[in-house]
Length: 284
Image (tube, rainbow, N blue to C red; front, top):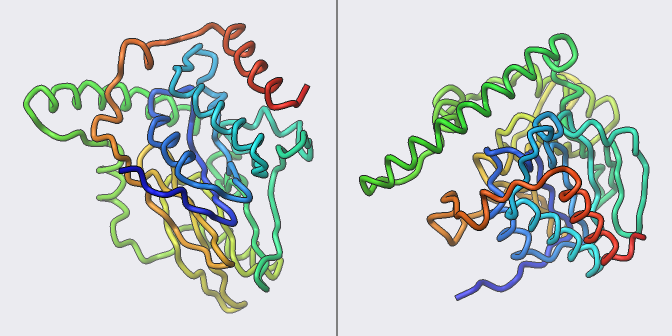
């Protein structure tokens, strides 16, 4: 039985990484169809331009784009905040097309609190001081994804459940970690200097809801996680923010089908398809 669509004031998702093998587009599509927000914030790394040159953009990923366009048509305000993997869009900062806008950051005054939303890569010293290392890590992550899919095929053949290797390794390293990271400390300092009550970011792929305290005060910090490992989103209803973990109703969500995941259009086909969707939405 299909659950009722949840009405929200705001939903914030990040690190979708469309156009990569790691992206879990199908559960994301289910999530988008399960909510009715007034505002949807796409908080960076939505389309992965670092890997986009590989011409990999399956139908499931294109369906996510179509669903976003449908939401825009229905009056949902969609704010695209740029991240490091989709930084090619930063030159379009403050662009607005109907209910769709592109910005580098977003500040809201809501329910007597100041909310600051941004991707978070500006506080990652590796991105700025060793960009080659960041891109090497992204490439290694992609290779691990391919290996992970091979492992899951073997597990399914013997009746086992799928697993996400990189999530298991990361959780083992970071499980129950109480000490603030340098990333979180930097964000806390910046937020307190702007008298922010709540800061929401992504980038790390680690969903968390905590309070960052210092001698200058305290600020609530929410990382909305990702749609590669955790399927998480920061949601606001009636001024109350929470971290939501989406549970897909399809146990075989990651299984590729020959008519879906193996569809690899060339760039002209992809741009033409997206352009048609934008025309339908009345952008042109």
